[in-house]
Length: 82
Image (cartoon, rainbow, N blue to C red; front, side, top):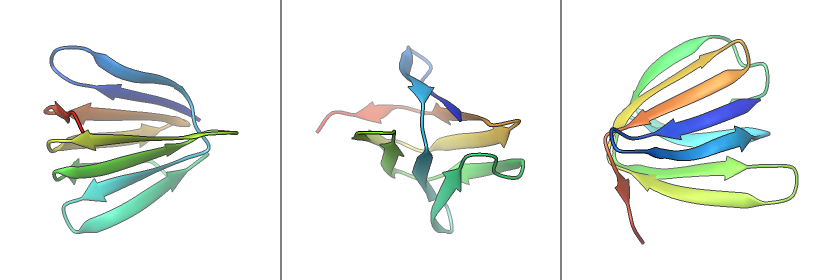
């Protein structure tokens, strides 16, 4: 699936992923390839992006995620540097 993580300032990530774990407002959830369409709000927390050979972690400050037609778009209010 194609994943984009965007903030109001810049594009933080764009690429292929096998799964992404997100901090939903009701708890963490995971999106895999060919996930059913979904729109969800996000709280502050860790986003884990898994690719074919590596894992990347981003810390977001809230936002929204949309998954549609194997494209996942995360619109984050900000990214924390850790």
